Length: 71
Image (cartoon, rainbow, N blue to C red; front, side, top):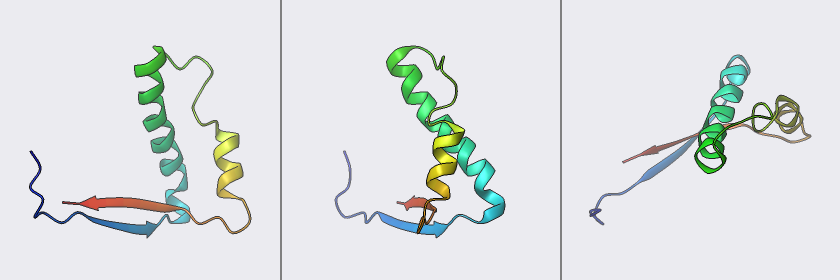
């Protein structure tokens, strides 16, 4: 049971350019876990694909954040 008196704090931190590769791989790994749990494998390659992520990262006005939750 969760104590309703505990405040959850969520913070955003910009992803630095030198962190983008690891950020992308961590994102794909996170999605892969869900796909494997649901479908048993990731046969088609990383999800989302490198191309999809790069397109999102490079979209006009795109801002990339780490999301941290502190309890």
